[in-house]
Every structure is written in structure tokens, then in C-alpha cells.
Image 1 (cartoon, rainbow, N blue to C red):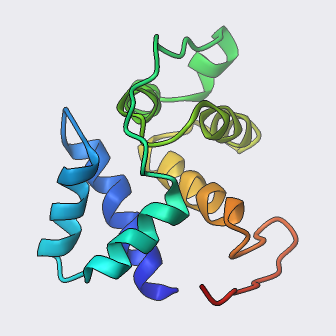
Image 2 (cartoon, rainbow, N blue to C red):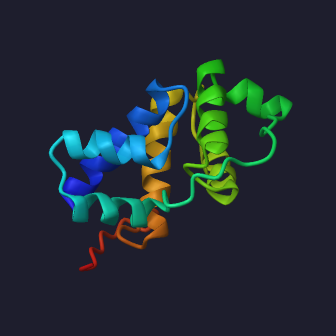
Length: 137
């Protein structure tokens, strides 16, 4: 579980730092960082990174969303969507959760929230109820 969380953090940072991102680039980065091929496949399956088909169009932010997110935060969300790294349902859940948080939401807040969402979607950890349930995969 620890290696998966490390890989998740590395992937989220990687998406932020590069203009164009695809599955091969991420796999190469993880491999060069010392992850084995089976671990990389496992991380991709947890995050649904298997489909890098960019979405048609750009997510527009409402006035209240623009007030809540930093400019860099909104750009990061759009980059996640356009790269196809996460689907639109994850994007909407990410925005909803961030809208409920206190203060202005920056890229780091978005990354943390995204990691929680992706892990919860695989039912590895239930952060909302305070339960940590690890499943063997």
C-alpha cells in the first residue's frame, strides 16, 4: 500500500510538471524511479490510467468556483481532464469536495483531495468514515 501511495503522489506531480502526458511517459517515469512492471500495472489499475483519450472540450468554472480556486489550481484541473488521466466524474467529485473546504484551493490541496478520491474509489481506504480498510490485490 505504501508503494502505491508513493506512486500516486509521483504521478500527480508528474502530470503537473509536463505539458503533454501519456501512459508511456508515466510508466517510464515510474520504472526509472525503481518500480517494477507489476507495480506500475497495479497503480494504473487503481487510478484507471489505462485510457488516455483526451476529453472533448474544456471544463468551465462557475463564478463561485473561480473565487474558490487559484488560477494554477483551475489550470491543473483542466490539465487532468484534458490529458485523460481522470474521468469527468472524478473531476466533478474533486471540484465538489474542494468547494466544501475552507479557504482558497491551490494545486497542493487539489492533489491531496484527488489522491483521497482515487484511493476511495478503489475502496482501499474510506477516509470519510475514518476507517482504513486495506484489501489484498
